[in-house]
Structure formats: structure tokens, C-alpha cells
Amino acid sequence: MLSVNQTMLPRLDELKDDLVARRQHPIAQGWKGEVEGIELTLTFLRSERAQVHRSQQLRPVNLGIPSVPHSRLTRE
Image 1 (spheres, rainbow, N blue to C red):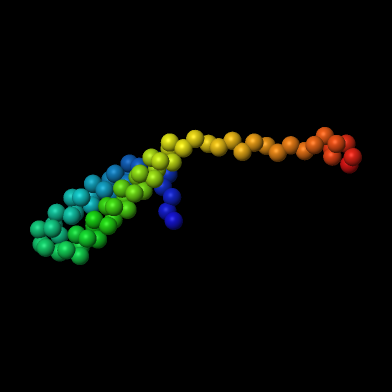
Image 2 (tube, helix red, strand yellow):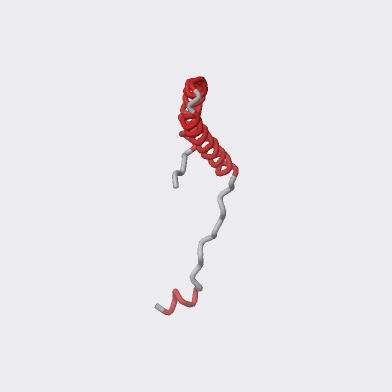
């Protein structure tokens, strides 16, 4: 599974813009398979972008640091 870092968002935007521009030619030519492939890739890019935004909204979880009972430390 690809995990996208937030620093890659500008690159995702570039890829999206390029695909949107490239989509016009296959549409004009009636190449339905090519258009479908581009649409599928655009859907994936949008999903990855949304995943990055969701991960930015998550707060870190404090799991705490386990403690060792004092009595165990003195016996050794």
C-alpha cells in the first residue's frame, strides 16, 4: 500500500493537472479505454490526497510509558 507524505501534495496536484489536460485528446478521439484508465488514476490520486488530509487531522495517541514496580528494582 502506498503511503503518501504531506510533502508530496504539490506533486500529486501536478500529476492531477497533467492527467486532466491529457484526458481531452482521448475524449476527442473516442478512446473510451484510455479515458477510463485516466479516470481511474485520477480517482486514485484524489483518494491519496484525501488520505493525507485525514492523517493530518489525527492527533497522536499517548500510549504512556510502562512503569516497573519499585519492589522489583530493589530485589535485583
